[in-house]
Length: 429
Image (spheres, rainbow, N blue to C red):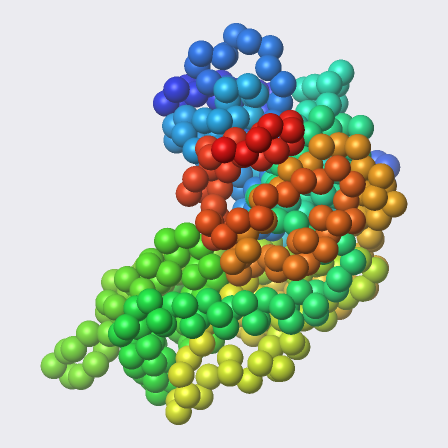
């Protein structure tokens, strides 16, 4: 089924596909995968090749375009762009507390085990057989989308003409523990940058943390706001404009009242808009599994954190923000995650995750791959990205300090243009 609509300077078509939940089982339960095809108004009648976009995450639907700008503007000069809602996200048989409530914890964990990059790419190949059966297509992945791209290159290179990655070259072999060993150190650096940039931020944060430590405070959603939840705001400080947004939130947190210091209702309302664990539970449930190959994550971020004592808040020490880490206590504190706690424990203990990358195939890869590696990226370790780049034949990269992790959102037209030039052997401008 498809549905057409017109946006600003863009013609969009909505596609819905029925795909197997488990491609290894026949017959299999079917789920829906949604993709939005967009083309510029001026090119709407041209037969253009496809560029498929893989969103960051895991667990987030593809970008919803408002107009022809950013990386989409560059892409639409020569492609039809396919914005794929990865399974479980957006309009693709969404995963949430409601949709999972009819399953036992064991069934939830088994169901979610089919929502990693391997099956996302199987979905993409299924869709390609429908939309572009005679022609391989081009792909672009941001963050976790880059993990999907490298799996695609490894598992189904015959479906690809070219590939692009921004802020998302994974290690091909390192376990989650190695990832978090590096990540915590980068998060410390980002904390230092944040508190050096905003001279009163240390006072604002520590006063707020002390208040939460000594008082029970409840968010507009009814959840108790804990110090640990406050620390999670750090996931935003590795983004362009993220530190500013966090600072502006913090500076209005505490207010004077006739009864003393209290929390500003505006802050309590806005806080949850900075965190997506209630609205996008796949991110919390499946994030560590993106690193797993024949091994369990065993709550890696939580275990590795024990080696970084400075992140454990006490009332007599300064608070540090954490980053893109998932902790078991989140499934006791976030309302939408509480019913999924048992499933989360089962997923964290799962050891038989299949391998995601064929090292021999990647060493002999023929698909042109161009990647942007951000040297200051808080989420993806630069050295691990460079390590992988050496292991993948035909991968060219642009190493830059100009952007944070979400550079493609801020300057996507320029970034994609550079990568296209790199892939095609042109000089970078």
